[in-house]
Image (cartoon, rainbow, N blue to C red; front, top):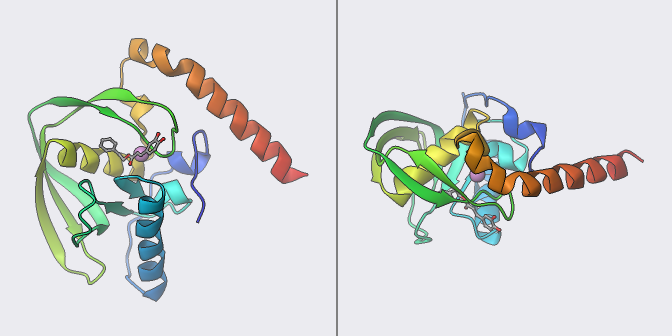
Length: 172
Ligand code: QAP
Ligand code: CO
């Protein structure tokens, strides 16, 4: 499994819903969860490992308590306002304060096909919004005012240059 880093175009895809939970999906999802821990992340979405499907993993407290793998997650209610500093594995070394809802209600499915309804607030609510954004091709840099983006412009240019270099090397 390989982490996809900005400006990889897979991060901009609107991901397809999962229609069938088969063995392939289950092993992919478990691998994603392991990969998230190895990368010291608290959340990971399909496109970040090159998989444009509506699949994500989440373990904000690193408590290893199931469910941590979510299929077709959907935010159905939002409340309040909060701004936390967010990072993203696909935007290494970059941190931004992002305006979000303070509380969310989420509907998602487990790998067993069980329907879940989850209420989250604070950091957990932010993480749900961050990861479901990924499933719609949205990154934290899209959620902040252009003036705030100025602070990370250099970092973005550098990631773009590094990506170009990798792409050029892979082609030869
Ligand atoms: C999304 O992000 C999130 O740059 C998950 O060097 C972030 O796990 C939700 C990470 C903040 C709520 C609040 C980023 C690790 C991990 C980095 C992550 C890095 C090492 C980001
Ligand atoms: Co992210």
